[in-house]
Length: 201
Image (cartoon, rainbow, N blue to C red; front, side):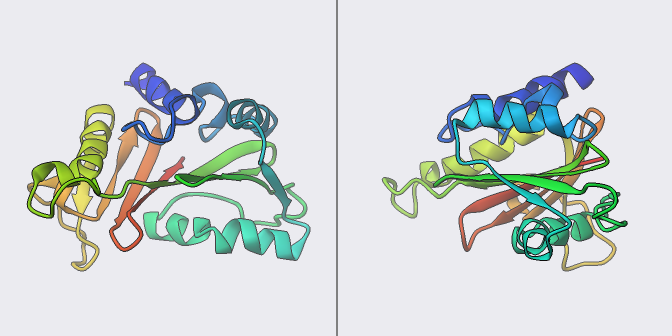
């Protein structure tokens, strides 16, 4: 399972954004627990520029990277364990971000180690298909098929507390689980045609 997770995460930056694959991470460099220095180098090497860095000791930068990116909101919704708010300036809390037309990425680290990674991936319906054709939803269902093939996840209904597991996971908007040792929390936002995928410890 750990080897499968590493392969899965390695696909994030190596695959083209149009491929129906999980938003991947450079397995040994970007996943939670990895060195932030290595993660930053791997990110810059794979995306070819446009990487922005933020530090916690600058209030405006901290807000952009943690709040405006929705990272903190997802960490809270996932109930994720992290220390990004614990003396952030003293503990060298840092962020790296990258954005293009189809993918937005935020890497968060503290004490030199990656704590969480958020990927927002656009997967709009097939515009060449009519509303009644099954292939119209192929980008969405295909992505979810890959999620279930690579990770152990369950669909949740946030409108019902406690969360309830449903029979058809692809029909739900929230999923949680793990890819080996890395935990995954996933939301689908139909209003923006985006999957928000959070990897955390």
